Structures are given as C-alpha cells and as structure tokens.
Length: 345
Image 1 (cartoon, rainbow, N blue to C red):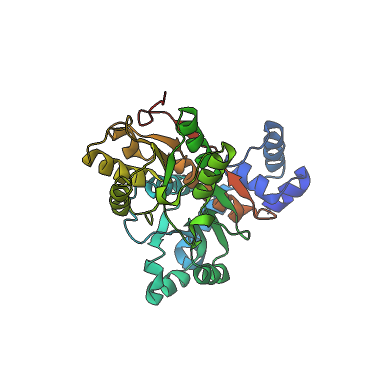
Image 2 (tube, rainbow, N blue to C red; image 1 turned 90 degrees about the vertical axis):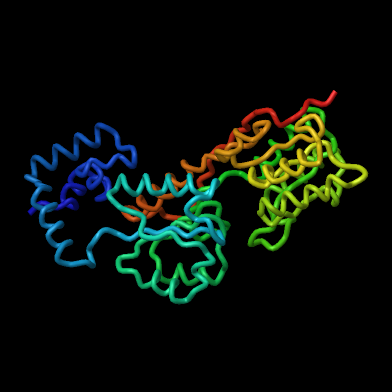
C-alpha cells in the first residue's frame, strides 16, 4: 500500500508537503509545479486517500485518543473574557482559523481562573491537549507548568524567547502616536498607562516609546503628568480629574490604550474643558468604541483579529511540521487620524 512517505521520497519533498497537497490544505504556499509532481506520483503509484480517510474516521470514533486535537486559549485578564474590546477580536481570529481546520476552541480561561488548582489540573489533564495560545503575559510559574505538559504554545504579545510569538512593535507605536502630537505643535504631553507583569512602569514598552519620543524632540518630561491607571478605565477617569487640577497641565495626553483614553476624555469634558481645543488625546488599539467617542479618538490601529488568526495558523502549522526554532512575527500598525487632536498655532 502506497504511503505519503513513498510519494514524498519519489518527488523529493517533505511528507507534510505531500499531505497538504493531497488534503488540499493551502495554509502554506506550494508551487503549482510541485503540486503537479505530487499528484502525478500519487496517480502512478495508485495512492488512494478515500479508504484512508474512512478508516481514520472509524478509528477516531472507536478510539478517543486519536480524536481531533484540543486547542485552548489563556488570557492575561482578571475578568470579562467574552466581551473585551481589545481581546475579543483576537479570539475571533483564533476561532476562525481553527474552524477552517474543523477544530473548535476547547477552552478559554483567564490567568485568574487558573489560580484555582482544580481548574488548572483539569486543563492539564485534558485528553489530546495539543496546543495553547497565550494572549499577553502569564506568571512564570504558570508558564513553567504549561510548558511541561503542553506540546505547543504560541504567544500573542508574550515576552518569552522559548515560544513563537505574534506581536507588534509597541515602542514604535507609542513613538508614532506621540510624534503625531508633536507634529501638531504640542510640547506639553502627558501619559496614561498601567503596570503589567513587568512590575514597573519603566519596563512598559508604550511608556518607553513615550519617553523616547519626548527625548528625541527635546521636550520636558514631568512625573505629575504621568498617570498609572493600572489598565483600569475608572481609575484613568479619576486620576485624570486630579491631573486637571494641577496649576500647570499638559495640552495633550498619550494613552497606552483606547479604554484608558475614553475614561480620561470623560473626565476632561466633565470639568468643562473642550476636546481637542483644551486637551488633545491619542490612544493605542483602535477598539471599535474609539470611533464613536466625542470627538472620535485618534489612535494607533493594532490588527487584533489578524494577530489571533496568525497565532492559530502558526500553532496548526507547527503541529504538522514544527518550525526549527521559536521566532517573533511582527505585524504592522497604522495611525488612524480622527478628531481628538488640536493643531497648536
């Protein structure tokens, strides 16, 4: 009986390449010439996939151990995992790619949920668990336990040199946003952000990009113009009200996320100031809400859906033909100009 290996040896390609052609899997580009060679060899060697597929399905029904691979997702969130304006598009991208391969997302957990040992052990003992996509950072201990059990882990915006990662250049995105404010004549620019797993604002990349942009243009940095909102829109709202009481305040704020910007924008209008004439805002993420603020928020578009889709594709490809080393896939970002920035005279 002819096997995929027999065809691969005859044509001089990998077994995974033959499998993709036979199963009409277009996840990787294969030249038409190679496809024709594979089909020709398959015909000449009397290869038939029909019986194999039927046999495989019968075995799958009889033996759960060879069922479809279980793929899950873990978010670095405390709650709101199903309706988060930034993470939800990523999850949609992941699910879309998995469904193209006939696979449903096996689970979606927050890091907080996995603090429960019962939940974590249930995940680690899941039959046929083949891969996990981690969105943003997880604790070192959790990562260690996942790596010991899960064959494949792919990260989205994760700082780990041992796994493949899909990300965007956060420092460059922040510099672009602050640079836009500077181009519009702003010289007194504040910052709104939060402290993540790094434990320090100085280690947050969007904050680093903000500082670099100020330094490159010789602009003054003031601690009192920096808001650590702990990635909470309510806290951004309250801290912005405090900042607006300062005797000398900035003319513009760069926000490390749109949600923090929206909270601060509300605080600004509530004290009777005009956006953008009295205070300009630029955000990062381009969540759906940002174009409905008043005025619409200028922001850096991050391709969230595409990052999720790419991460799932990377994981599925690695299951079939593992990459020789972990790498970082960096997706492009784009500044979306709206109406929240005032041009200074």
